[in-house]
Every structure is written in structure tokens, then in C-alpha cells.
Length: 72
Image 1 (cartoon, rainbow, N blue to C red):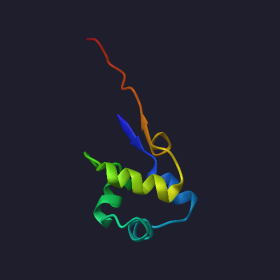
Image 2 (cartoon, helix red, strand yellow):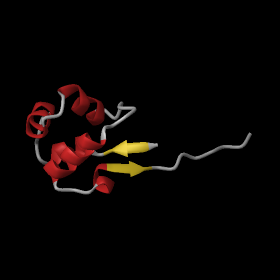
Image 3 (tube, one colour):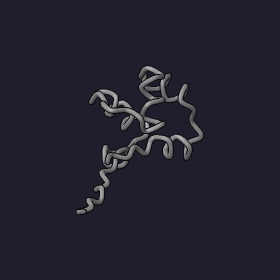
Image 4 (cartoon, rainbow, N blue to C red):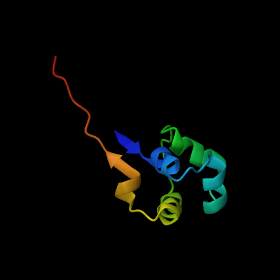
């Protein structure tokens, strides 16, 4: 599973979805999908713009969490 930390990062800076969309030039829907962690695909340009805005690396924005597998 890939976790997106956009909502946390926005909260720390008291930013709204509209603020991020305006500052990055990304479509509001793109920011909303990432904020709610419902995006299935993310454009590399979008990642670059978000990393630039929040002055972070890709690893700060996204995190890979290994899902537990169960053998029945």
C-alpha cells in the first residue's frame, strides 16, 4: 500500500486544497484525490510540483507500507 502524506503536510501549514491547487497549478481534483488517498495514478509532474511547494522529497510525500499476507 502507498500512503500519501499530503493531508498531514497541508495541515501542518494550515493549507486548504484550493491553496495547494493555486500554488502548484494542479487541478483541484488531483489535489483532492491525493488528499483523500483515493488516487490510483499520479503524474510525475504533479509529484514534482508538490515536492517543490512543500520543500520535501518524494519519500516525505509518499510512503510504502508492506501489507501483511495471511496463509490459510
